[in-house]
Length: 256
Ligand code: PGA
Image (cartoon, rainbow, N blue to C red; front, side, top):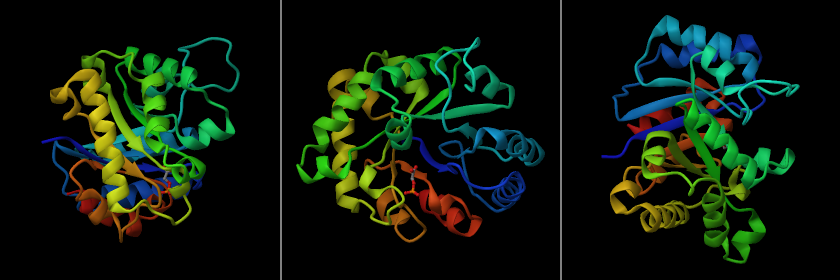
């Protein structure tokens, strides 16, 4: 059985106090996780410290701390950047790489993302690697080749061991992010099965079957169960609905 993951992407939201309270609420509720099902809280850099404190206080198994980006360099004269080593100082184990908002607003290229992936693997960290097509590409029905190109350019140089130990893929169609327009369960399953077929072509079926593929884009308490019931959907990357315990906790339970 593949690992399942529900990851919260808080984006640029919440005060430090709100972050602490939300982490507390999540960690003190009955999450019913096991070693195959985990939760990752990907919080703003400035909030890692308090969320880490909450995590160490409550010691809930299978809940991990994540960041939303990092530098591809480990240290040096890179003003304003955050190194994976600094993230590890705060017990951060996971990092979202290649979110469409960073590709779009920070012009992050496939080449840069490849370099970030390599740096994180060199530090034994977990990568939540995002891919997904914009609306015009979906309208032309060329989403498969678009996503294939993103994965080939930034991930497919890895060997099978690196891939299975460090990579979780998140498919997030851009037209569904923060818009209230969710991909239908069939659209999600079709893309996830396509991504798995690409992994299988490149690494063989046994490896492909091990990689978790999460869905993201207006996933919420109402639609999570149906989305996650698809064979190739192994959980979700959750934005808006992860900002409140009462909308986030049902998504965790939908995974379980
Ligand atoms: P959303 O965001 O759930 O608010 O659509 C998901 C994401 O961008 O990771």
